[in-house]
Length: 405
Figure 1 (tube, rainbow, N blue to C red):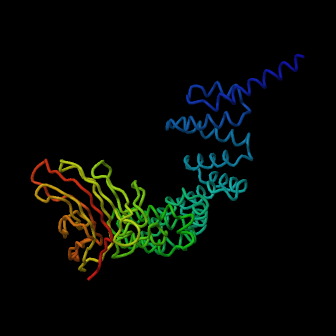
Figure 2 (cartoon, rainbow, N blue to C red):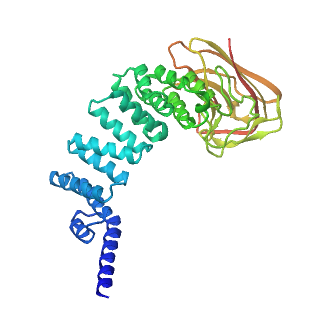
């Protein structure tokens, strides 16, 4: 009975120490926990982590000792061995660190965490660069969250040479896609687009689609609209966008009610005026975009717009057809206009006048050669000289097209 009671006491004490260590967050608890569970690897591992967080020199040495104890008690746990390898590395003991990294690789040869950590260790130590990047690229290939770090490491090791960085990354597509996005942050636009262009098509529309969306968004942010169109085309974005072309100009694909669509789709601002819907009255096809106005405020207007990728130095003609029952003070209604990517107005179509039949409105403009390669087509209210600017009635808009002259 005495033996059984002792066994129960020690077992309960060990279990208590293990459970407490899982929730411990104070360094002053460490002596108590390790005394209660001296043979529990979890207790020593928790102690090591807590001590490591203080950044005190004495605690760093104590942390390493606790990592060693945890690894001795749990030699087949690759996470514990990997943590000990990193601790040795932080302490500047590269020989022991290397030994523990190799042990972690033996325990978990296919785990990306081990590959990336060991590859990074080899790279920092000036060791075999090919072996280091084989490991880093393999980790990025399996775990996309390593892709960005792998891309930056490759570019730094290659002295900012993109071709050399690509060679180091090998066939790790996610890392190459991350490299493209990183290059965009450094304004290396053409290098970024070339990297994306060289990736396999099935990956662009598959596992790398999220990277492609990020790349396209970055290109739009940098006002590189033709390159963005190319990326969206690779992604098979719907509705599809094309150079020098208004996307869904007849509204047959509908108009999204939110901002989820890409910049080359129609976007409608939030608000109550005017009411906007699709109508089955159309110049061609089945539908048109339908507006109902009933306001006296000049600032009460929901903007409708779309960005189009174009070629600087070229001349264009914007056209649309409409039917109108609009009535407004001094004929101050609404019109289509074209702006450059910086918001400067390039052209205005005539205001929508009362017309029971479908009527064309148009405007021509030249996009200067030194401007970004995108324009914005907008439906806007006419300028009003007073805050009170009544407008009421209905408008149908259809077949908006852009033609390069």
